[in-house]
Image (cartoon, rainbow, N blue to C red; front, top):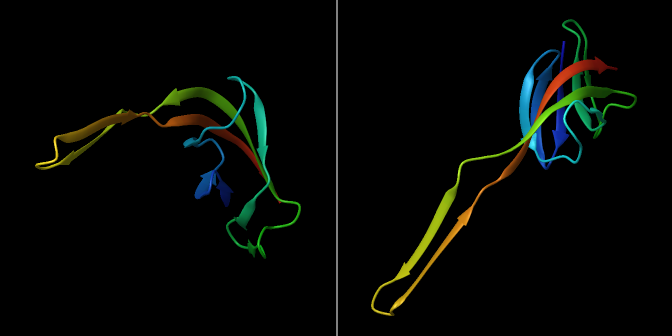
Amino acid sequence: MFAIVKTGGKQYRMEVGQFMRIEKLGGEPNTEITLNDVLLYSDGENIKIGKPTVTGAQVSARIVRQLKGPKVIVYKYRRRKDSASKKGHRHCYTEIQITGIKA
């Protein structure tokens, strides 16, 4: 059984018991959340495809932790102009564990 869920502008394939690292969601660790934008649901034999989402389907998950990704350095250099800029960025993620899929 799996579902394809849209969250944070991206689509993820989720199965029960799986740990996922998705775009940052608000909430404390060990908090239950539900993801309602289910685009596709499959129970092994039947497949339900949403137009755009499957009505009544939802994925429940538990927030494991909030974390940041690796630092990304952006360095821009313009030759012969005595100009350079350096910026850094760390992306925020939420790690979740899928606890159930309902259709």
